[in-house]
Amino acid sequence: MATGRGRLLRPRWLGLQALRGPLPGGGEARVGAEAARGCPGASGFRKGPGIRFAASCTCVSQYARCGHHCQKSSFNYFVSLDGMPSEILLKIFSYLDAISLLCTGCVSRRFYHLANDNFIWIRIYSTAFSPKRSNWKINSVEETAMSVSFLSVEDKEAGYWKKEYITKQITSVKATLAQILKPVSPYTGLPVKTKEALRISGLGWAIILKEESGKEHMMQHVDLSLNDTSVTVVWYGKTWPRLATLSTLDLCGMTPVFMDRYKPPAQNAPRWHSLIAKYNLSHLTESAMIGCDRLVRIFCLNPGLLVGLWKEEEELAFVMANLHFHHLVERSTLGSATLPYELPPHSPFLDDSPEYGLNGYQLHVDMHGGGVFYLCGTFRNLFSKKGCIEDGYVKVIVINFKNNREHLPLIGKVGLVWRTNVFDGFIERCPVVDVTLLDENRKPFWCFSSPVCMRPAACPSDGPTFLGHTYYVDYKDEVGKVHAELVWIEETEEYFIVSLVLYLSVAKINYWFGTKY
Image (cartoon, rainbow, N blue to C red; front, side, top):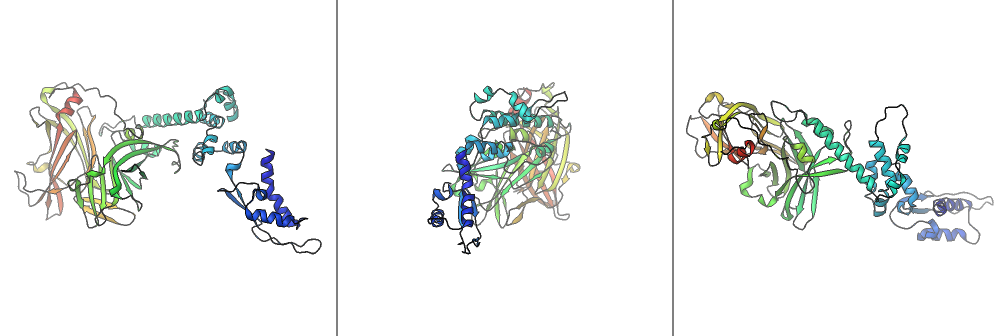
């Protein structure tokens, strides 16, 4: 401690000597020379990066009693925090909160070990998780921390209480989110407070672009929009890595470790990652392209990822992820950085009348693009007979092509609005479709959110003849297929959905109900 005080008082002593005048025996010249060389004898601190203090930054002139003019002098000193004694640093760290303490541990190896001090973290742990008392006497934080045996603190390895605190914080956040998501809407089959859970948790999303060499580039989302049953997340910027060097893209949820209901999380707050999906960027081929305009081409990678490439450079322009609300919070928080969240084991629902096929299903469809909604419809009492099985799929007719009363118009000019920090645009006939299919028990049977393409039909289907161009919309995944037909009416300048058919996988139905179709 004496050595530390000497180092701290050394600059003040040099400043006083400069004001007093020349020292006997050329002391002033010696001190000035040592300071100019950055010699340890001048400042008492190591050279290197640190906090810089300027002593006598401005010229100090003062006349001595004898009438001689004191020479102007200037000294620069470097004070390194790393040179401070550990006891002082630990005292400083004890005043930091958990977030600041974790950030401090990232500065250097020494700071990391000091920031793992168990006595600091036991105080933070006791403050956050001390049990509530019913009596009027409330112990202070220090008394609560001291109530823990010193042996239990000293015997633990460094960082033990830091890990305990972070683990309990994560468990607390997950329990809070699970409580918020308990109420389920009988109409949509989805949690009622999904948007509130997203807001309270401070949940965000990031993409990790991986090069073939193993180098990774992480980007946090720039913009997002909440829809009725999905969220659209967008990334863009000027610092994209070259597409030719990239191999895969990982989509992850990012949840703050420390959640506060009443204020947004700090930007530098620690977060944990949950892998949602992995995409192979080598699949950005012509078969995956769903649209273009004069600036960009867009490609669709299942599930629900849209990648925009500049036409001239063939480099990344933006990335858009469309995430359905079904199990979104769980997938974004309960997975790990390398493994996605796995749904709990499914218990088959009892089908009382398997011989009659499917009945009592409900479908909710949203069609939108860039915050503009073109369709929002709910279809109830859907059914399919057991005999309507073709090529491993059960056919469910939602909108009958031959029944004009079921045909629905789309509002506005259908397409996708995209934007970056430099340009924006509109790609026609490339909307995003959100599908939520509920079974007879009002449980989500099939949910997805994905961009689709309205492709011109080579020849119209058999049935009524419409005065306009016909377009097909097709989507397919492991659960089923969607086929829709739309007609562009020139007179009114609007699209009409004249046919909508679902094809549900027999394997999914057998797994869901325990049947043997």
